[in-house]
Length: 198
Image 1 (cartoon, helix red, strand yellow):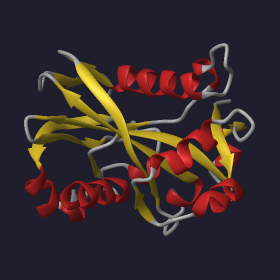
Image 2 (cartoon, rainbow, N blue to C red; image 1 turned 60 degrees about the vertical axis):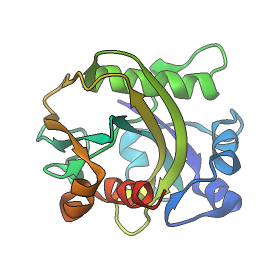
Image 3 (cartoon, rainbow, N blue to C red; image 1 turned 120 degrees about the vertical axis):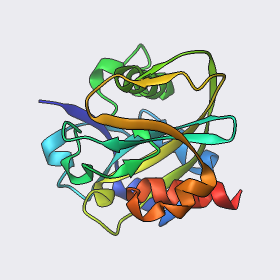
Image 4 (cartoon, rainbow, N blue to C red; image 1 turned 90 degrees about the vertical axis):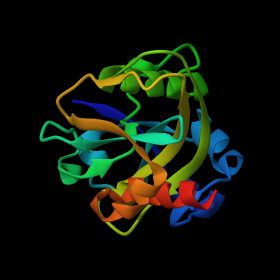
């Protein structure tokens, strides 16, 4: 049984719930990663419990003016998103990510690195920073998830898929992503709109 990191929806509301993209990372992330405010829940329960939000790192990869995108294949862990185009690589934080600080920041960032290593093979070097959060309560997937958006700057476009759920991997200019926004999953569409407004 997979266990996933969650926060109470009430904490999100207390910090200031929003719809769409929120760039004020410092207002939210330290509180959400505080060990007093998060815990692990069985995933089947979490997927159907809107009184909690699953924290999902959502990593975007940029190189030389283009962004990595792909199609979610049939082996995707989130069946509700299969066949959608995405610019985000991400997944749940699991107990395997824990370190001495248990549920704190290091565990979260361990989970980010683990998810990326499972899904992609990245050549060259990279830097990353958290640029915002995503919330979308308009659908059943979004109602139980909260995205933390990481922007990776890559030294090379040498990136390959490491699993069957990641298909048709390519780098695209932002203008092309905007032009094809209707084919993107909701979180990717929200991110593209934010990137276009920067």
